Image 1: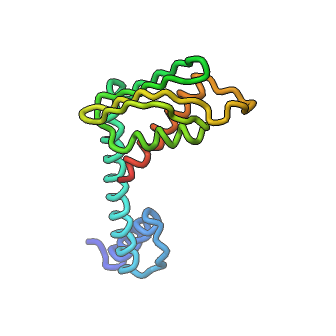
Image 2: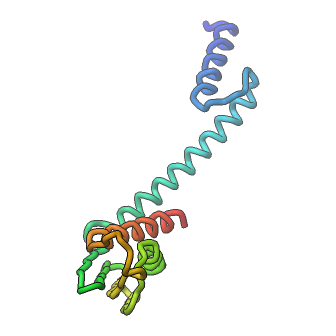
Image 3: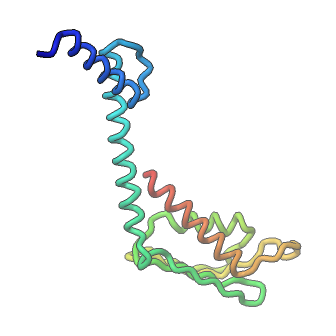
Length: 157
């Protein structure tokens, strides 16, 4: 038969293990250790839910429906085309902010956001006398950064 002292020692050992796993700061107070463990489990559940949401968002952007971006240089302007098979509510705002950060002014744009997202824009540099050179790769990179910001914000909502 297991003595009362052995049971008590085993229980103390388990409480200490629980305390170390959950980073509990309670010394020997059993109720505090269990409360900290309960809070730790709640936190883990929230993390799992957030990760599941992130996975669902990432899965919704498979290679098939990740936005296609084409940028062509036309004299002093850029023809920018962005297309994705799904509707991306709010994406246009992030792309326009990206244009603004780069110093591009939209001269003309056509946008469709019904079942899919389709943007076709002609943009030019706001400051044509600027020394730094902007090419199609720079414009494409900035549009990608705008899309990435949109994805991050969409995941948080």
